[in-house]
Length: 265
Image (tube, rainbow, N blue to C red):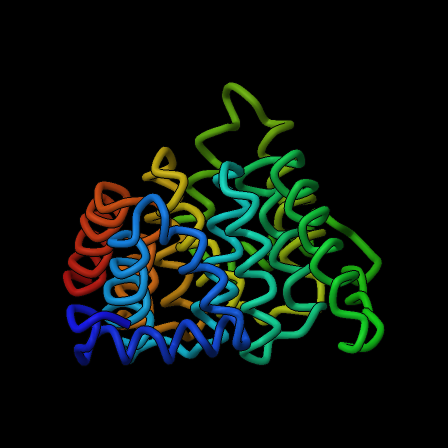
């Protein structure tokens, strides 16, 4: 490293990047050395030294949220593969990674989820020593609508029901699909607990940047299932590194509104 790179932010970020990359961090930086060496420094100092090492989220939470956001955006396959590997390197399971990618289909569509699962397959196949993949179990049998209705109530409460009610006069079938598929099928699967599902939902909705109302609903949802305001702010702040500052700033505006609304009750 040059003298310019010898600073606390760089050292802290390099150590964090090394943890995520499992020792392959220099390959990331060397790939920029001939065209944009300063970009490599920014990644280390800001992306990992400033943001990634902040308190408020665990390494596992940061990596699963990043995987969700990159898969939802659908425009950063190499970085998605890197962070899927990073998730495994910091202690996430293959099952958790796959569940996050399945979860993405609700918010970004099946193509984004399928492309994410293809990336996961490639990463898993490159790591045969990790052991076999054990899929999570599907949602329990029974009435999908009733199961989804209960899950929605548990997560989003009145805010979620307002979304369903708003569709009754124009697309009641879509309201039924939201309950049966999104909450009855996907949210009710094993493999991820509800706080993690809501955290990654806040991350990917922030990164998408086009779903402000849904972001607000799921910020409420995160807090309703035991997440904290600090976690909400931290995961939105992290999105500055992956979706840009405008997306993060808009996400924080949504969080401010949600916090104020809850304080006013």
